[in-house]
Length: 273
Image (cartoon, rainbow, N blue to C red):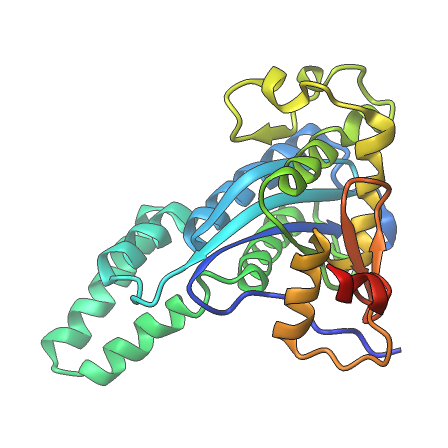
């Protein structure tokens, strides 16, 4: 069966995504603390380079979850900002090398070549596919060198779900952060080092948390879109899906998720909304 297209917003504005990727053959390649520490560090650096705002991150022994937002602007990323982001991702030596290269092109009057170089970096920014490619490639290089590992680190493509803001985003945040608790590794999220959230207070995140209810958000992983019926149907239309039957699957009582190209709820219910 052919892989279905990834749902991404390409216009100006902010979109939210739940991303997940596994180690090859579900091996416990990240079981060592050093591996999880490095993966968390690279995730943060790759996010800043890519213009992705992290909302929550959890790294397990054989997979990781990211909840993030991407804000796209009609204005191109300036040269100075590109150089700064390269420094965040690769360090000062990379900044010096890139700055000298761009200065040589400018001094020689190669304006078109200079813009082509900058556009190459811009294409890697503001996009979840490019972000995950940067993250996974950088980690794979480190892992292979650190552990003299041969073979693929990652199991195929990553999973992504577009998420509606508000309560749906909070359901996803709770699901991402509660992974080690549900797995029985710890009894309290604060006891697990490799969970991060931009929320200032853990109590705010988990106030009124119901594991049985929010745990149903796990079903999102088999879908492409998660939110209200109206949100799911809007993106079905925006992406031009042409399935005979569009169905939005109810995820318990927390919202609706598209599953494959059988998206949205029953036509009658979707039309009624």
